[in-house]
Structures are given as C-alpha cells and as structure tokens.
Length: 70
Image 1 (spheres, rainbow, N blue to C red):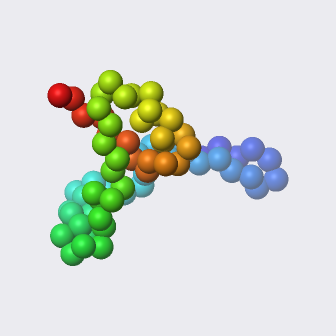
Image 2: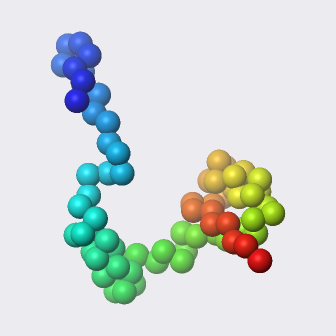
Image 3: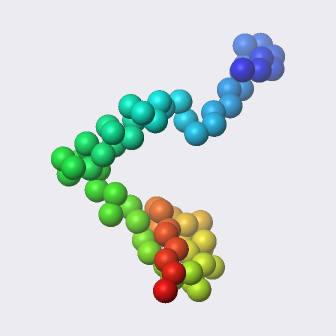
C-alpha cells in the first residue's frame, strides 16, 4: 500500500483477495444450487468473430465473451 498525501492511499489487488482453495468450491456450490447461473453470463463467439466479441464486451452487450474454435 502506498500513501500519497493527506491519508490518501492506493492499494493494488492482483487476482483479488480470495483464497482459491476456499473460493472456488464456494462458487461451485452456488452454481449447483442455481444461485450462480454462469451460463447466463457467457456469450459465445466463433474465433473468426473476435472483433465482434471485443465490441460486445466494450459496449456491455456481453458480460463474458467466450471465443470458440471449430
């Protein structure tokens, strides 16, 4: 943590503060209970449509664009 001035601080976070061994099983449990519908967050795009996927992400039309091959 870096103190700038007058009590203002900047704190960097890399990959969040979660402990993966605890957090991932918790997410899986929520998904199994139907409380975390991951499939509704994903929009699939063919790899050839990578530009459309980037545009959808930047405009908010897609929450998590996923590129597929084949």
